[in-house]
Length: 74
Image (cartoon, rainbow, N blue to C red):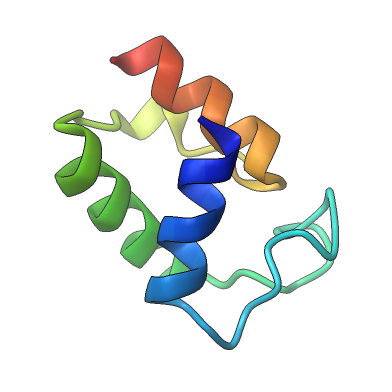
């Protein structure tokens, strides 16, 4: 799952190195607009709805966090 999400997001946001940090939000690599794009991308790709309460730093700081969230919501 992590590999698929990395590939998907790297294609969608080529300017961001998603593997460079495990604190993508905390380090300021992801901003709110990018997070919104990630939510849309993951929702369309995996057919999931990401509820507001899942939009927390823990879920978006790393590919591992994103993969865990997608698996939990699938």
